[in-house]
Amino acid sequence: MASSTKYIFITGGVTSSLGKGIIAASLAKLLQSRGFRVTIQKFDPYLNIDPGTLNPYEHGECYVTEDGAETDLDLGHYERFLNNPTSQANNVTTGRIYNNVITKERKGEYLGKTVQVIPHITDEIKRNFFKLGHDDAFDVIITEIGGCVGDIESLPFIEAVRQAKWDLGANNFLVIHLTLIPYLAAAKELKTKPTQHSVKQLLEAGIQPDILVCRTEYHLPLDVKKKLALFCNVQLNSVIEAMDAETIYDVPLLMKKEKLDERVMSKLKLTSKTNTDLDQWKAFLGKLKNPTQEVNIGLIGKYVSLPDAYKSIIEAFIHAGAAAECKVRLKLISSEELQPETVRERLHDLDGILVAPGFGERGLEGKIETVKFARENNLPFFGICLGMQVAVIEFARNVLGLSDANSTEMDPATAYPVIDMMQDQKNIQQMGGTMRLGSYPCELKKGSKAAQAYGKTKVSERHRHRYEFNNTFLKDMEEKGLIPSGINPESQLVEIVELKNHPWFIGTQFHPEYKSTVLNPHPLFVKFINAAIENKKLK
Image (cartoon, rainbow, N blue to C red):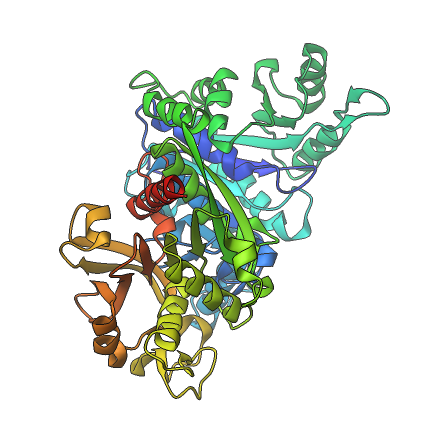
């Protein structure tokens, strides 16, 4: 490897969902704050080509990058922490690896060789490990290996990590193992045995972890750290305690206190270019933890039993709330529970309403009732993707009097298809092929609430949808007060609608939540929170 890039691999043991993504993002933040150029990539061991077709209940939200890749929600954490965009290359699944290898085999690229897991699959995994390091754009690349050590499906990834050490050389390669130290209440003690077994499995695969990051509910006493160091073959100061935190945004500071970045730099022979600069991060945390006011926001969706399905939206509210020095109390409400007779009782105490994205007609009528309530009661409203489409359907039905108005996604035979698939999409059969994915430009109407929020008239936002506003109905809607305040300059498709005579009523066809980060909260979310604060004062 000619590149001077250093590689860090993060594996997980004992149980999944320990927060490898947050540890990866926190370490990356600390290295970035010392002047290093860092990126993070996630390798997922499932066979889907990408998470685009996964039910949100299976895997949480599907996060979309600037280049239109449908990726794991951890990439959202990477972007929110680092304030840098990721791409297709930052998320690779087993499905993509096998797809690439089988495609090459069919083209005859292996020259008649027997194609096997080793070396062909592991070579393809390594090729993807190193892809982002070729042009020296990064000093450090952190690779998170999804799943748990010991899982059958992650074995090829672990083997590829073992081989990578020999390709890179000891000073360019580091393994961090994230593990759990459970507390047994009956015995009143922390147990290291699950971690010992987990590290033993890594050792059997030929990998010696350099650093142990231990998730725990209690502080690790010195004797426990010594035991872990002795049995797991790591230095005592490389046993890092990761206590449960009040917020994920505390984790970089906790890891700094534990000197995780210093251990990494020492092992990789990295010399810091600058001192750690976390002033902006600390200022954000200060505002987040010391709000001067609070608002109640309703998030209306159909996956509310799994908040991870709306991860980016929830985090965007945290960023915007901190910017407004306001505690945002989110109330997740299932749209299926909202009926015309119950909608007032369920929503009357809210200061603002967000109707969430989604696919399919389940819960649609509840969302329509929600929009009607917000429109008629001057309640600040924010609709994202399907939320914007629902606002258009509600307006068509209840203001234009087109009682049968609908989206052709829900009712292909509707007489008034106010939301429809564009003509050139209708012949495409594959699920992913009909989607508008990734970043598209949008021009904002001067003087509109959208333009005031952004403070400019040209923006670029990320999309993930299949159906569009039907321009046939544009003139009628505009005459009655639903303004198309954002238009795609190339296709003339409507990107933003807003109500003329309403304190704050905006629907966006794109997903603004994907671009909200700690240091750059999204302006539409900030303005929505400000509108909710104003609305609360009027009560």
